[in-house]
Image 1: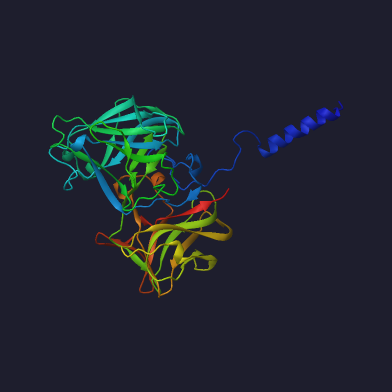
Image 2 (image 1 turned 135 degrees about the vertical axis):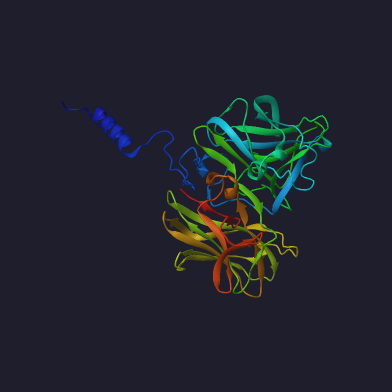
Length: 404
C-alpha cells in the first residue's frame, strides 16, 4: 500500500520520537552523588530534584560549628522547614541531640512533642496547625550513646509527603516544668550569616525557625538543620553533616596546600566552575585553584583574586568561586584532586565539615565521593581532629557547578 505524502511525514515524525525518546520530561538528569541502592542504605536524590537550587556536585554546605536551640525555656519552639525531594511514606526522621552537654539539656530532658506540619503558603512560609503526624521524645538521657545523640523520630502514623512540597518538623516542649526539664536541637551554624545561608539551597527550601512564647515565627539566620528523612521505599534525604572543624584550620601558603580528593561513582559529571569557603588571613596574592588527575597532571588551573575574599583578621570564612575556561568531564571510576594553593607571601585558612557516617547518617545526605586533605611535610594526609590523625570523614566546604 502506498502512503500519501502527509501520512509519510507523520510516520517519520513518530519514528523519530521513538528513536530519540522525545516527549514530556525528557531532559538529561544530573549525576547522582550517591551509590546507595537499598532500604538499609537509602538511595540519594539527584541534585536536579531539589527545587529552586542550582545544579552542583560536592557538599555545597558551609558551617563553622554547631549551635543549639533550647526547647522549653522562654517558651521556645523550633521548626525545621524542608522541601521534600521525594514522594512517598515517611518511615522516620533522624535528628541530632547532645543532651549530656552543659546547657544543652536540663532535668529529665523534658517532654518534646514532634509534629510534621504543612506550610502556610505565605511569603513567610510558617508551619500551619495542620498536623500530618506526631511523635514524642521522652527519657532521652537514658538511651545509649548513639541513640541518644542521633535520635530517631518515629511517628505514630506514617505520613505521606510529595516531592517539591514544603513541610515543617516542629518541636515543642510540653513538660509541666519546661524551664527545668528541657532539651535542645542542634544545627550547623555560621558565625557571620550570609544570604542564602547555603549557596546551593534556597532559604525557603531549608531553614530553622524559632518561636518564643507562642509568638511569631522567625528565621534563625546562619542556622542549617541537621536531619535525615527516611521513606519506606528506601529513599533518604536531608543534611548529614554534623559539625565544622573550625578548631583545626590548615594554612594555604607556600608549600602548605589543601585539596579534596574525589573518586567519581555513578554517572559522569560535567563541571564548569568550583567554589570554596575559606578565609584570607594575610597578603594579597591570588588563591590558585588546580583541577588535577589522580597522578597530579593538570586538567585546568585558575585563580581567585584576593580582592574577592575580603581579609579578616579573625579568620572568618567566605565563599569564593572560580570559573573554568571550559567544561570538564569527571569520569566514573577515576580519581581527581581539587587543589588550593597560594604564594608564601599570603595566607589563607581552610577547615572541613564532618560527615555523620560514624553515627548512622547515610551517604545520601553527605558527599560520599571524596574527602579533605592537606599538605604536611611534603605529603598529603587526612585531617587531624579530636585526637585522631589522617581522618577521611571530612570534606572541604566546596562544590562544583554542574552543566547538563
